[in-house]
Amino acid sequence: MTTAPAAYDAHHAEAGFWRTWVFSTDHKTIGKQYLSIGVFWTLVGGLLAAVMRWQLAWPDTKVPLVGEIGPEVFNMMVTMHGTIMVFFVAMPILLGAFGNFLIPLMIGARDMILPRLNMLSVWTFALASLVMLVSFFVPGGAASAGWTGYPPLSAKPAYTGVHWGLNLWILGLWSSRRSSWAASTS
Image 1 (cartoon, rainbow, N blue to C red):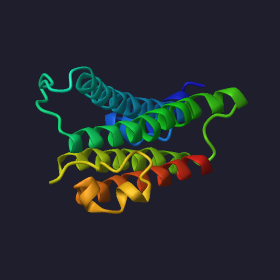
Image 2 (spheres, rainbow, N blue to C red):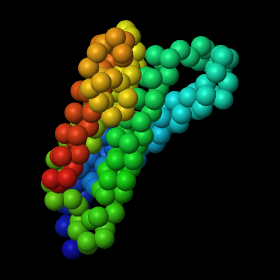
Image 3 (cartoon, rainbow, N blue to C red):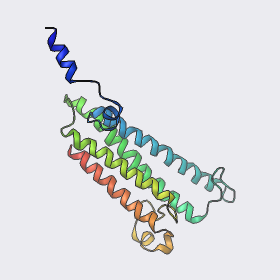
Image 4 (tube, helix red, strand yellow):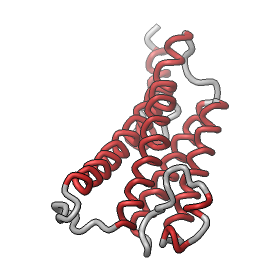
């Protein structure tokens, strides 16, 4: 009787930080990862909303800690705020976080059906988030083609004033879609 637990403990040592929190296949941990990425983007999107509202309330004044906001920067803020709040806040929190955390508990399963693919989906989403974040810092700034990206505004660089920002925006949205595809198959 006493040898079985000792043998079990020898083979199942405590997992470290990386295995427990970063490369976890546990659905609850993946739900928390989606939630933390979504909360980060909630803060970024909320900051953009606050700056836009300041600009609308007092159009000819400088925004504290930001400075002067021109029309091209305002278009960029509208584009990025809309994109962030829909694709990087609502979808990962509602579908990724709550879906991963609650669905296995509600149906009585131990985990999602493909846990490694589920882990891959959250890291693909993290990569998409990184691409979207980098788009703020490229020459010309982030995308300013409207959060829907319709061609009258997005097709001509004269309207948007950006090249790399729009490319990274499209790449970030595409990567985000790939991650939600992987999450829906797991």
